Image (tube, rainbow over the protein chains, first blue to last red):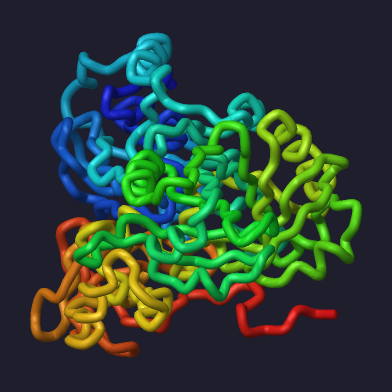
Length: 124
Length: 388
């Protein structure tokens, strides 16, 4: 599996062949505080890169989620319905949000870990 | 991801933010520091959920030193305070505190206050004001104070902690628990915590029993550490702004700037019980007498929604008839297991038990009008006798 990539809207993605797993970053979950609910699409939905696909609701705020790639939703993390706090406790593991079947190439404007770290530090 | 409805704002860490004497301790405890009305304070240390539940089940320790502490003394202070606020201060005995509102001439609420009456003669008061209103309040008080009455801002040299929860009394490391036990609800006394002189007040903002501790700012770190060391083994936690907001909202305690401001009068805020029209003249009395006679046009109601449907400040509220008002405060209650909200609506538009609708992320979600408070904690009521 290739390394984890990041977006400036604080999603992460990993690609395994054509299957792309998406979540929100540790920085994002820390900013949001305790997540209490996610509004997510059904499998089968087609998404464009940059398209809003759902909402993550924390005690503090509701925030839109954006797809980092174009593709079709192949799986949604069902565990999040009962345990939305997985986003906080394990954002890169059990707190993954959805999987997409990639259409075309991975976008070129994603950040690697070092670049994302630098980006978040510039945001602080 | 974008911050579409962030209310408290993403952290804005600039050197211009004020810090309490406990800042370094908050950071060392892992506190996620946020800008809260110009103060750099912890939103949470570990998780809002854990801190919220600790306050409800054991105890939580809050740094509330951002709140303003104003000493009012000197000849004429008693008459001045009586004319400044809605509640009847003349009935306040030494070592007792009183919740009151300070209003404009037109009845709009300038701030909500807790007034502590000291024992050093009739003109000895300490008033705790909201952090965001401190400078406005000081200006208002000084503009109305007669000569001879002194108004002193003690917010720097005096720090304030809140230790709140059903086990707060048991877990407070005080040298004389019997003395603490004898403090009535909204009463206070000089005492010692961890060998440090403090003023112990049985007041709070969570709906639970517990204390607010006034401490010399040079000593507050010692007291903070001692309480955590003593109470942590039993499950008490340091608690941040997130837990403070959730617990106060469950207890339906109003938050100035959200649930009321200068455009809201006490009756609309459901705080008519703090307005003593018969006590004699005070600022706003004429306007408030008229509101009482005619009846308020708006009122605060409680709303309960389904998990996930958090109605945020400003969200439109609908009855079967149509739009009736807006949410003033809303959050998810980890303790109750569903979101709760306060809403300012037209009088008699929504009654307890009725169905309502409220805007959640651009759609109309179902809500139920429920009795306030959402939760009644372990706080001793003013009417309940002190255990002896």
